[in-house]
Image 1 (spheres, rainbow, N blue to C red):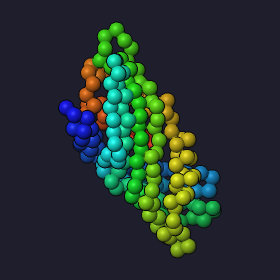
Image 2 (cartoon, one colour):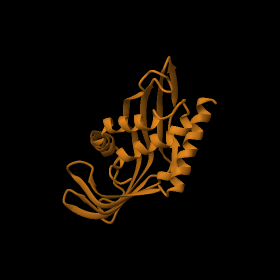
Image 3 (spheres, one colour):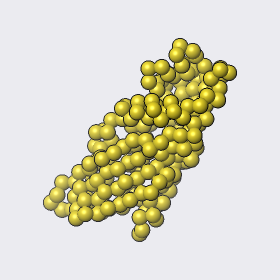
Image 4 (cartoon, rainbow, N blue to C red):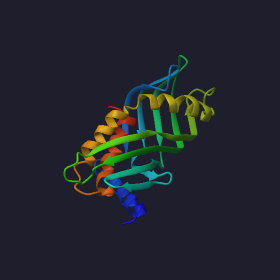
Length: 203
């Protein structure tokens, strides 16, 4: 099976799993986007709209398999019952039209006898959070352009919160159970591990 077909099958399996277990949204009790913006009682919608957002590659060198994947959501909306910006409270919503996460990792000794299977996570982060549509109950903030704020402050802040070691161990736990490389089989668990780190403690 070609790489494109495998990744298409993998995405389809993840979507089916999300639909089966109703993983279309997560509730986020509280959080923040840095020192000036905090929120409580928020919902993230659109987790069932997973899609590829860039070129994906697979490289096999001896017993090692390296994947470089780019995924995002066709529909990503976060609503806030309470959002505080510099001590001003409001209800609000953010829709991120162009979002992408990069997952780059290597599986060592997969399906091999006599070698310990392990995973090295090279990169897990946001390619971009752009085309941000912001609406709020406060007219002075409604429709505010947040492109620079997300690029310069939100992305670095969110990436600093990701526990990459936890993701690495999670990938290793799921992938290394496979006796052969079947991307479409282990990809749903990969996606789940990524979701759990992007939205910690909600999934």
